[in-house]
Image (cartoon, rainbow, N blue to C red; front, side, top):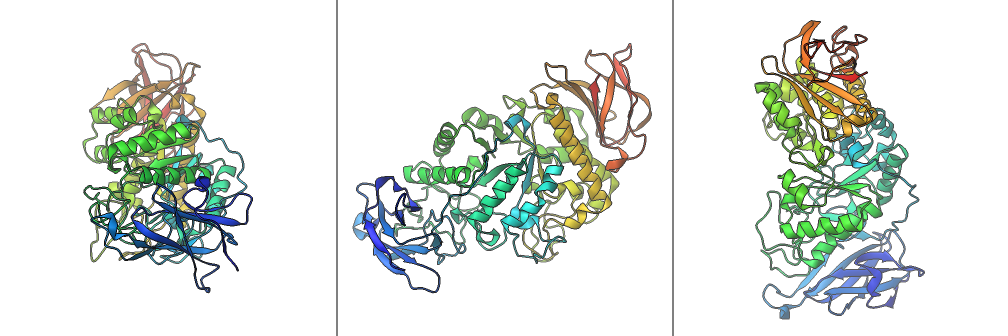
Length: 606
């Protein structure tokens, strides 16, 4: 293969990274290296060939170096090598540097010696319109650990391929979810991990497949009726395989160089300088890549409060929101109310919801605390808060080292409630999990469920094996009785939410409080006459006859039970609720019901 320089520098519009030339056989290459004296492109056809070397020319006034090369096609490998300019002042020692392209669309792995690959990002995506934000039902998953355990031949510590997930999308859709929120899909250290340690921001995790594998997964999600949200991490880089550190030899900014902030480390690694124009553009282009080249429907910003400085975070989110108004932007932030007022976001994670719910159900069973939990006063609209009472990856991820049996408190909900190793076999813990998802689906907010929660998963989630075995999603649990029962409850609760617009409005009226028994009831409605009453019984008190009176806040009429988390098909018992009873509000303003323990009942006004 013969490569030839078509022009150097590249046309100004060719962009940073490696991009195919419109109308010409070749690629443009551009890299930001403002403290370099010279930069060369190293390129080869494959790993068996030696690198050819081509000098790049400086783009006037930009700190970038570029050239257009003919003869380059998708799949060729390349790196950048340069010399630091010691005349640029302190922090510039001279000497050579060599790195993978920070914007490479594909890499061999996260290692510092990895090549980047030239990629054709075109893909025949079909048109897809995601649900409006208030209709979202989010299933959170990590692709690499979603398949392989008691399912397909993926041994422990081998990630599942993006394409292998496609076969399981009907499983997610059958539970009436309409969106998937993937944990970070970008390259991270090693082959198995959570994904929250970005080493190559523009390259999908190589152990899980190629960029086209991920594009095929997104297309399959859309064909199945599932919107796709990508998780992006702009608040830090890891210490392992940090491919941005001293990128052009410059060691200012606490040693990190051009991409890094002159600020303290985050809890997970060094912070990047989101207010520097070139770093801002790096993040903005990365976000646009996930939403454009991978046809994502939205983003979830990880730990937005740790993006440094805050003004850089504001600049980034505002630019994306104004430039891509059809996309849905969600963030994790430690101050949801402030973040919703500050940023143009559709929703913010209610980070305290899972722990508050677990502590209340396990301990206090306080009606005032439950009432506070289901409210959305810190948000302008109910859908602005992403709620996950049974836990997200943050509450469920764990990894044991040494002889620790407990390994910290993080694990699936039934073990947080019923105990380590025994929670799944505990009927009460399973009933509390059923209550938790039924409440998540009926209370104000955008519901989110982490993979495995729908089968009362045991233990904790971890993509890696540890001292206590393999902690990927166990597909055997989808086939046993407790798993099938919880799947049925999740599917029916989701169907209830999707079928009743009242549950997607900004309405909420608490009509009944019973601190002694741990019972709370609330109404939600819309202007077209869809009126629902949800009755939550946190406690062990049980009323087998229709003698428990629930206040309706002055409402009357006849009501019909349309959901009962203690129905037998979910793991409860026969005649636990009010099926086909059609009770009327009595003269004292009360609706008299059978009320099972540890339950959520939902009634429709007839």
